[in-house]
Image (cartoon, rainbow, N blue to C red; front, side, top):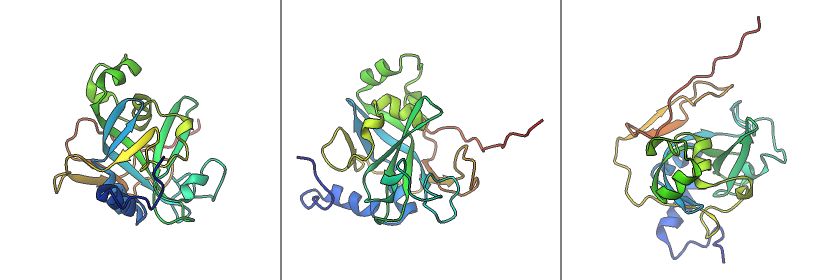
Length: 213
């Protein structure tokens, strides 16, 4: 049986992670660094994330105009997966955070494959370097085999996509904050967090609006 929210009394690590995700957005985003995501026979250690609020002035958030069928899971409860399709070809995954009824989520931007490397390479045979397998949110989902079927799943349970606390702690002083990558609104909010110097972190690209000729 899958664990449900509140059923973590026998696992202190999961209980602490559940409490973190149910709290404020930015600490939850930082705390996801180093956590491990298991899916499709592959495990990825999260090295980069981006935080997105709801309707509180965050124009880059999918929820800034209110609840829709697409973003409904962003409104809680925490610990569930918000998976969306982008550019007509890629899946991306967020971890829902905060209190129920107030939309917020953390995009999983990049990670290091720490288990199931052969499976990951089979899924992405064109990738030359292991550090590039999950370097970027779409690549991360492709490496893990995550698609629309993961939408709404509870990540702290025993389902096909599972989020777990770090098996090795993140050293103090290694978490860096900066602007989000390539968003069309709220460009310079320092709501992207990553592990300093990690080779799997994606390159920064500020969104540049297109000009009409």
